[in-house]
Length: 120
Length: 220
Image 1 (cartoon, each protein chain N blue to C red):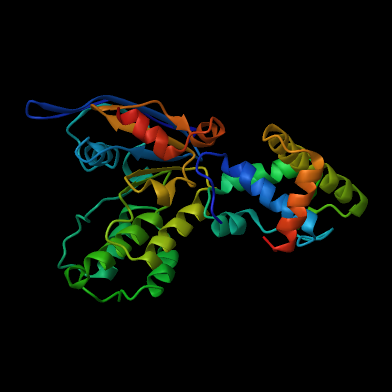
Image 2 (cartoon, rainbow over the protein chains, first blue to last red):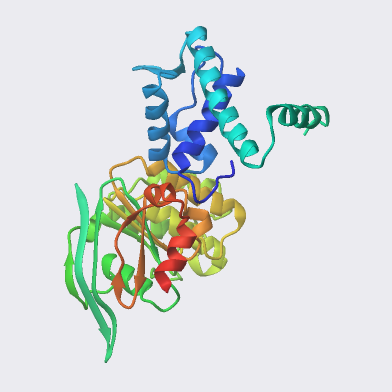
């Protein structure tokens, strides 16, 4: 994984795991990697991963089974809601930037369709 | 151990004062980077913390067998064999010999080889393995990646990640910020004989500053 060096590592990994959950790569009830394993994979301090999992637990996206580790929440409905909120936030930030650049909704939509068509 | 504390470390070579009151207080579980230009006294400081240099003033909370220290060069006689080095660590420290031997099996170092017959890189490997396998409260590493190939650099980084969960303090003196910046919990800059404030690395990034920028800024 490549990290931006001037943003907190824990927030970058938290976002990465969220995307895995929302895209279904880590489906409902999937067991998450052990702290050490994920730390080695990302080449970061394991304490950072502890913080990532704490953050995701706080948001109820994952839960801890005291004997078996961490799992993605089994509630698909809840994850769908969270995903929607996550994406809306991204879309709002993007829309804000486009608005600042003077584009209206129609122009942005057109541009997006173009971008998707080109497969970028 | 709750914390590793050093205070007021002073050291002079003749008239030249290299350290003039260096302080540090790191909680158990910290992974501290000591950054600094060449010749600022990083090795001098680590030699003091690692029991090699006893000619200084100041206080250190953890010393002796509770401190493992990977120096840039091993002091063990070069005509000795690798297995004798392991014996020495086993006698002096609380040493996980099985683990050391497992790690050695993944290198091309033979236990019967004499130290002087090993390449510079292999000497670094055995140096790391021995100190890493000491069950100590403090682990000091002086430029641990120097002279090592990509593969063993990876071994060092991965091994340190595995042990970073434990309640010990790891201190790395290095220029190689890129290799370690995501492992550090804290960094401090050694300059003009003093250690700067111990700075939480994630907090730094939260303010939009990378470790490299922080280091650059501290040097000015």
